[in-house]
Image (cartoon, rainbow, N blue to C red; front, side, top):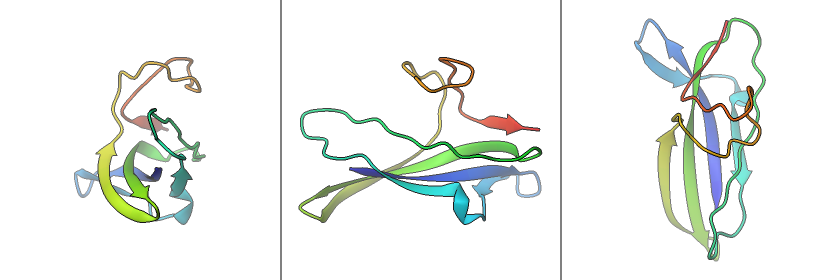
Length: 99
């Protein structure tokens, strides 16, 4: 199982979230084998001041013997439990604003 994380920013002109054009705002994370268990993973991205309102779009992919089984795309949401590396601790939000 793997997940491809893409950071999006709010474009006031388009009134929508759009992908950050920088290649450093994307990451493929290999999660391993999900046989009889759930897996969790993530990645930390660094942005400078004034980055604005951000969110992530994540595409999960499942494979068996190298063959694709399916994908599911989702955007970040709030209210998650067990957010071990949150700042502030145990905080969960759908978006992040960097002024």
